[in-house]
Length: 314
Image (cartoon, rainbow, N blue to C red; front, side):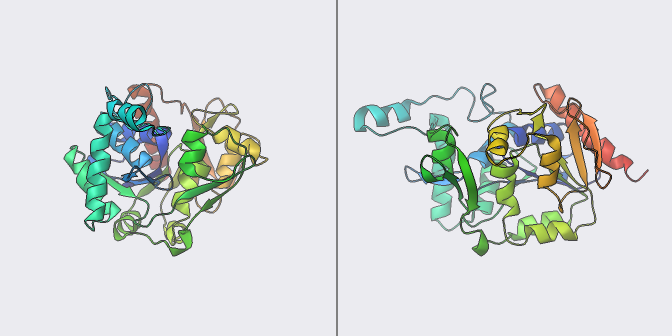
């Protein structure tokens, strides 16, 4: 097991959070750094909302709602219901009452001049987390979705308000050309012994991270294992719109096409046992159970992935 290795994980969403939880079960926290998608962040009701950062943070703190994989366990929506009842507000984006505490403190710290990286550290340490949780960038790089039905939509309008039903035409990462790597992300990747790309949605969760200026070049300069885990099993996504997006972009929903998405970045790929083999001689791959329904599943996938990578040097 890679107990003495520095592991950096690029991730977002529920699938990424599950792998993060598995890694946290088997590795020292000081060895783990999670670089999280912020392309779906937005300002709402005067508050800075960071859904992927919060999902990973709540999952690692064992506070996440187990039924949804996001939000806080046992939360209520009294405030949101009051906003709708008394003031007629359209409450399409769910904000729990306990969850509001995170958004209020984050927004206050940002307004006081703290960076998102500093703010995230404050929040995660307050919840007792020792692993490093880093936003992909301190600049805002909102993901914008061009759709057939509505033209261009902000990510949360597409994903939550319209429940990702519109047909996707293209995706852009607004402001990515002006973005930069934080010193913390640069340092973590430069010191990584292994880089993992979680089984998150490649187009919605990982592409925004890879769009940050300098990140692809930094990954290309690393002489370490960089391994992606499939988010699709037997032609379907485990969760979310990955398969729908692939179909709308004219791609077959296969692990091979997921691996192709990361061409030039990865040198290893974790495929599911139910998928067809990749059949590529230029890319190391292994087939294991990647479905993470239980805590044991999360731990098993994390351990299998790291043990396989450790065997490369054998």
